[in-house]
Length: 348
Image (tube, rainbow, N blue to C red; front, top):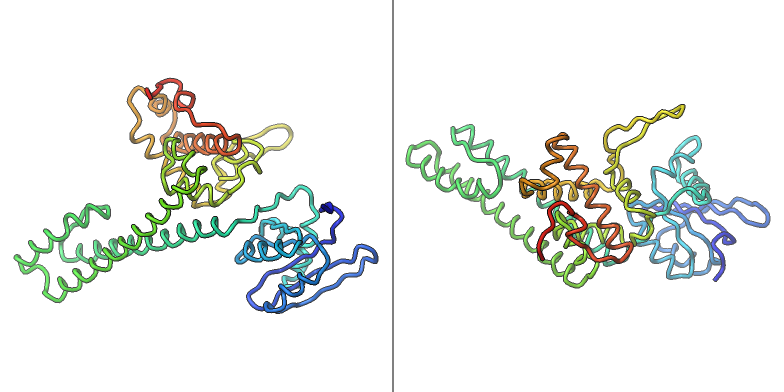
C-alpha cells in the first residue's frame, strides 16, 4: 500500500451544495482552487488519483469520509477548533480549504476517527432521546409553574409530579380552585407528556437491543456507574479506544482532568478542562453520583468524602470510571470488582 506521506493532499471544505477544494501539485507547487457541486463530488474523487483528503470533523464529515474512503482515498478528519489556528485573513470557503490543507500536514494534530454507520445510528438515537427529554422537562416545568399560580404546589421530579397531579386536580376542582377549561387543558398536557415518555421508552429499547449485539458495550456495563446510556454512548462516540495511549489521556480527552497553567517551572492545577464530548462527560459524572449515593458507609468513597468536597469526589470517581473503561476496551481485560475497589471487595 502506498504510504500516506507520499500522497498528494486535498483540502476539502464541506458544505450543503457547493464544496471547495484546495489542491497543491507535488511536482510544480501549482495551487488549484476548485468549487464542485454536491452531485459532482463523488464523480470527481472517483476519477482523481489516490490522495489524502482532509476535512474538518463537522456535520456530514463522517458520511463523506466513508464515501471517499470507499473510492480508494485516505481520509483525515481534523478537529475544527485546531484548523481555525491556520486560517489566514478573511474567512471564505477558499481560505477554509487552504487552512484544512495546511493543518492536515501538521504531525502533532491528532485526527478524528471516522465513525461507522452503526456508531452514527447509536449517537443519533442518543440525540433524539436527549431532545425528547428536554421537551418533557419543559412540559412538566411549565405545568408545575402554571398550577403554582393557582395555589397548587406540585413536587419536583417527573415521576413524583405524575403521581400527585391527579389528586391535586381533583381537590382543586372540588374547591372550585380551577376552571373546567383549565383542567381539560392540563389533562391534554399530561397526554402529551405521556406520549413523549412513550417515545423515550422506545428509544431506550432500541439502545438496549444494540447493547445486546455489542460485546464492548456489554463489557463496560460491569463497571459501577456505567449503565445502558453510558455504555452505548462511549463505544459509539469513541469506537477504537486504542487511539488513546493511556487511560489518563482518555480521561483528559473527556474533560475529567484538571487544566494546568504554568511557566518558569511552576505549574498550577485548576478545575476540570471540560474538553471533549459534553454529553459523555455528563453521563460519566451522573454515573459517579449514582455510585456515591449507593456507597456503603465503610467504603473508600465515604472516607474520601470526609476529606474532599463532594463535587471533587464526583469528578475523581468519574475520572476513575473513564480510565477503567479505557483499560477494559483498549487492553481487552476483564473488569474485576476486587481490583477496582480493593478496600471493600464484593463477594461474587
